[in-house]
Length: 379
Image 1 (cartoon, one colour):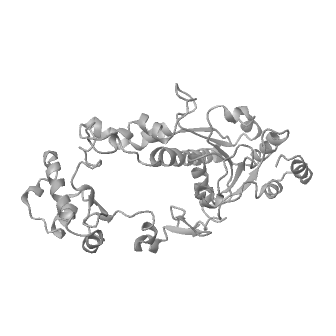
Image 2 (cartoon, helix red, strand yellow; image 1 turned 180 degrees about the vertical axis):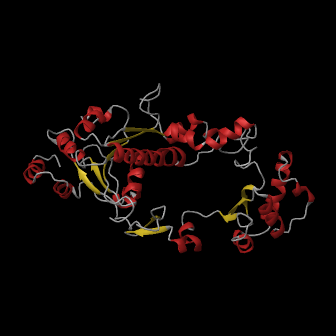
Image 3 (spheres, one colour; image 1 turned 180 degrees about the horizontal axis):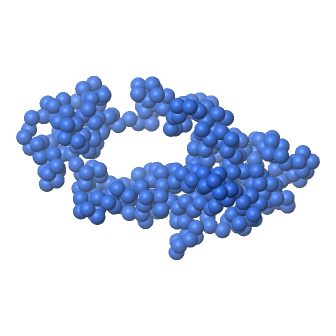
């Protein structure tokens, strides 16, 4: 694989959600990532890998870690790896005989990335949870939604992917840079609660300043402002407006032919509910496409709200090749882009165990041992 991370070798202990997404990011950028899968029929949910987009770009080794010799085989791979990524509850990897102490004893320069919801320690460390729970504890969930309703569910972007996978990827890269200088690896404890809180850094600053209310729907970026929210159009589709700066706000008013003097009170929070109601009436006079013809590409800070089918077809996304198709599956392309070592298109997701023998041989495991593992059903 080409790409800025070509040459890195990473082991991914297959799990759900954020850890595979983190591994996908490394693979998208050219790292060699091998997935340690459980063999089919050993408790692994049956999922058609064609649709497991976050599994793209890496080969799969299916190994039964409960059988003799399996743990030692993984440790031999660890000796040759730059990093390992796992997303289990605290203590699971230790019980498998693959905890950070054992792995780093075999490979002192190994960066051991751990992805959990609550973190490796703390009162909730061993409790079950999902993205929505971690985001709730960080304070972020409280701020999302309408003022007169419970908080809205923001998909699993904030905990799993933004505060989880991306924070783990950043942490592992930091560890790899440090290991290059010192020769010593370390453990990266990436918790989604920590990450979701970190993503809220600006809001906590606004809160301390006194410019962010604890009530939803009253603030600059939570839909409270009439110039930073979404509106329904005549055809029932929606548009998004984000005209914060005065010059962009003026462009919005001019192009929408709004000369109501009340709209001069842009930053008067007392006027926001009334102005939002009046602007909603304006946007209901045309269809979404009619508003696009008038506002898209201007400095009104405007965009249509596209659905999953529309987004890949939008001219801007098409021009930038923001989406790709692998084996007929439309999905986001690797990002970001680099001017020098561009990432290649990733390979489609693999079947569990599709590359077991090839991986072991490529990583220097003795052919006789590979044959023995296969005969005993370890791989």
